[in-house]
View 1 (cartoon, rainbow, N blue to C red):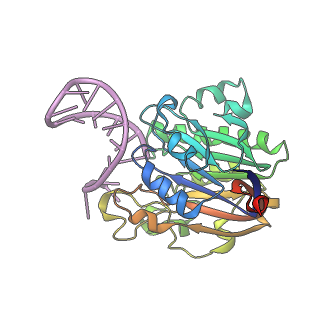
View 2 (cartoon, rainbow, N blue to C red):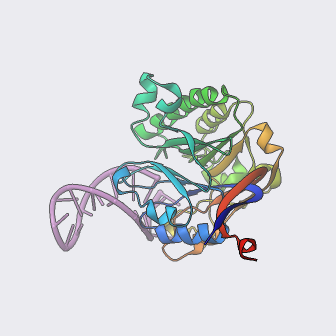
View 3 (cartoon, protein in one colour):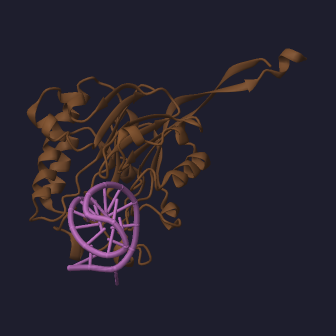
Length: 290
DNA sequence: ATGTCGAAATCGTTTCGA
């Protein structure tokens, strides 16, 4: 049988999903990939050491896989239909032998790759726990380091897509009860300002280009019946540089997935960019036999 | 604020982190 390579040209779809354990959610992830077939899916909270990452589940359905993880906590991964080039992990990936980059890179929260000439930066920002916690201080330090990391990444001039679980609701319209929650953890002025500083002048939250209203959430706490009461937060975001922003067609939250049996507490967020993406596939060359 | 999860060790219940 003779096979030929064919190219399917289409837009580029890039997604982010905090899956709260890649092993527990493996089947839900592959089901979702088969249904929507995004070009890129960025995972957070994979919660698995690199030696145990279930890469075959994804390579079997056509995705290339890069991961940066650890036992039990954190962990990020890139799944892509296209080659992942110039892989960079941790803050070290941009900042090199910088004391802060090394110290704040011990928790596995950062992975980036060049995919179809777009720099995709996948982040799992620390949660911070509570305003009076050491973890909150760590979160603010981490965001300051991210600021230097992103300026270094921007320096190369690649189209930039920075996405993930930011554990910050950027504005009051991104939380279900601002009168009660604004100013608290994930919604404090210091966190919001630190995130703004990290993003800089150019990167913009693409969801807000299409949707100005509140009541759109990406995360619902497992506790207190938050899902049943639709008490959510929009803490998963996709930020684009100006060149990609002007080509973006939609940004959607796949809320339905949060209603799965044994769901992650987060839903996927997907951006569709009018950027040529060619999926290489093998097909029978029927003409040859005619 | 915490009514639930997932992972790991203290192993079948508790602790931590979210």
